[in-house]
Image (cartoon, rainbow, N blue to C red; front, side, top):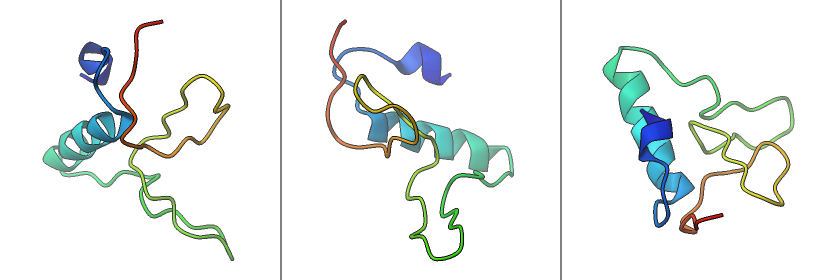
Length: 68
């Protein structure tokens, strides 16, 4: 579902909300959401969304995706 939704203009936060709706709609809980190792703040996203210069564990945001 998320792969089909990825296009220019969509944000990683949009994709995150879609993932949350999908996971919760199936009666499950997203494992990344609010995950907090000892002494660390909770991860605020359902997905890790890494774009270009973000290598891993990117936090979903409101920056629209662009072609390329």
